[in-house]
Length: 336
Image (spheres, rainbow, N blue to C red):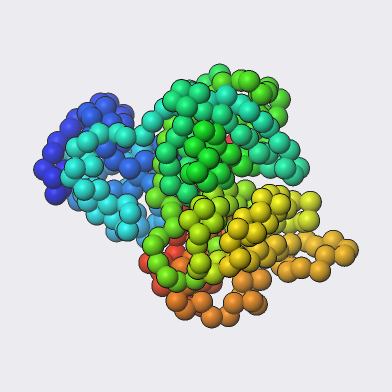
């Protein structure tokens, strides 16, 4: 274990992450099924059996030696460097030795809202402990009722609302959590939540901000925008929110309430399949950005949405002048 020279054992077929947590060590993690990319570490020596999404860990990164600790089981003795990584992802020796700081919370379903045909709003009230401390942009994992499985969801509410959390859930056909949400869960039911996780957050800067969102990826962007308003932000912020049709737009009233507290916020809904009477932006959300902001040099970019949208947005904003180190997102592969 470089550079800290600490060692721990993994059991048979046990992942590098599970072994570390069992040994009282800490590695950054999130979804724990290879879908978010939070747990990437650098494999210095040895071999692993590795799974996980190619979006959470692209092939080029795998070729450079990066692995997902939650989806990698050692094939023998291995050496990994947990101090390597991009801004906000590398570990200090103190963090590594301190063990897992993520909490487990008992929550109560306070409200389930049908936001669109395939998006639900889920408000959870914290019971034990009664509040959660997190950074706007982070996510939690929620148990799938009746199973040991969990699903990862970004929080849409800001840190100032610490007694409850708002989640935005995309309903997927055949999804275990989707089915529970639509068919079984009701106000008063208990759910176990773990977190917070993730490194997505607004970085301290004087640069203007562009936020590009696709569908349910609005959640972390909304949380960050609300937190910026709470902090009396004066930086210009432009949110491009792309969906298919007008009926797929949601939380616009919440975004408008944030804009009322933060005059520098501009909200640009974009429809890829506009119906009669729509006078706003059309096409893919990246098309609208391309038309309205041909130059993005000197911007920070925050992205939320499905993998294909994030790939297209990263290519666009860097081509238009955003430095790659100033592009931020959490990579999620949708699971129901």
